[in-house]
Image (cartoon, rainbow, N blue to C red):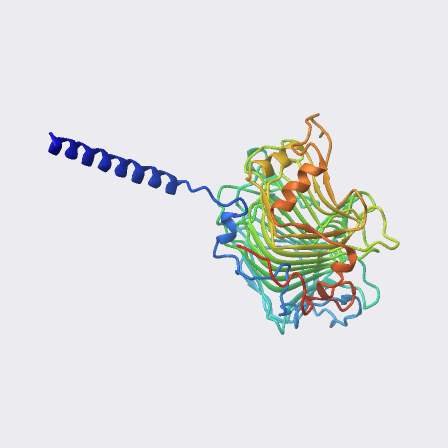
Length: 465
């Protein structure tokens, strides 16, 4: 009898061990991650650095970026690029006039060598459009960047002196039918202005060490071309070390797509610095923007980040959800600044996002979480933000949880205090202007800025991936 009881006890213990092991394995299959752990930041795309913001102590903008293009002397044009490019074309290194809307059609690749200068014609709204299935290979170097710039002389240049670069791909978006016509007046008679599809790994070419200066021509009243527009561009496309300066509209705008990018610079843009729409879901690291108080969107608002899922269907899929680390945006300050300069970040219309390890200082307003669907994504943790620093000047506008949206739905964050509690729990901080001035080396100069960290900067540690 004793032996039977021992055998029964052994079976019960064995069963409990098996049950416990099964329970552990079940939990391992769906682990409960720490609240501030965002899985996408563990991706190999991201360099695992310890500092906050776009720069540590190494200035990756040195040698190829230009923070004062108004005074730069460029050689005169000797050749013209115009019309359609229907077969592969490789330019010789030189200086070209970009005249009218130039289309690189499906199946064709335009290759631009390092050191080439392309000057956009204003009268014909010179623009470069890469159609779906076409490619742009513009690979400059740190000593010989490729420059797209104004055709006006030094001292006579302005935002909107020419069009810009528009790249259209076959990745997904959330537009009806997964296809849309890109903004900016692109000719769509033969479908050349359309973007979107099902290939999230589509390849539209490569941009490396490229500067885009004084783009953003007004095609129609209140309808400008961005510095660089990405329409459903796929993840096989390379974008690294690219600067947009003094754009008449946004510097960089993404409409859907999955393209990733590193080392982006925006200087003096008129509208938004980085704009996300229509289901964009790429990864971004090491981005810097600097506002010029003299440049703002007189017909709208000028924000650091402006992000939407969809203008009318806030929960349509795929949801806009950029994953961002190590961004720095320097606002226009607080002296003689037009009211059109608004938020460091405006997240609205159902957008989702991951934002980490970033710095936003010198802004009129700080962070705005607008619309219920946007706040819901933060509460259910499909959106997340951690380890970010904000500094703004307007009391009561450091953090904003907007009231009822256009659909009459109350926001997820019923009070600013509720948003503030979330914000603080993720190691985000609001700081004073005095503290902000001690973060970076020389971020407020409009002609010779330095965004690297000061010795002993509070931003020199704290990043997590």
